[in-house]
Length: 186
Image (tube, rainbow, N blue to C red; front, side, top):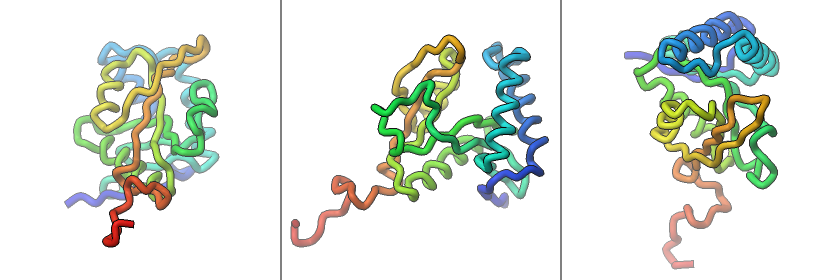
């Protein structure tokens, strides 16, 4: 039986993260999705990986000790999310990459992050992805995310904003809608 753990990535994971990024680019290219290819975009992605790792923001879902999915817990990307989105109500995840597609690891990773965010009192888990990667949009919808909006920024290829409500996981104490009715009807 496999053992699943979620852990913070360390400097020892740096090569693994960059290798995952390279594999992700190749995997997407093999499927005709070139949105992340090219030296400019690849370089930006690798630089972001280093920044997130140096800030201690990357987490990994490990199967029997080996990372199979990674992602960075980030703040809201202010190119896309605004104060009108109630920025503090959500956790944001970026740079999600998987080493093994089709085994449900991505779904498990997102579920574990969502549960942690709900336990932290957040009402939503948010992410953004490439505007034109409709297969990825469908995947996130299947994981319980809804499309919030698509934002066009000339300097960014991303901009499809998704959010998953966390109310069903762990209602916040102040959310009376989710509280069980007391016996006295009060």
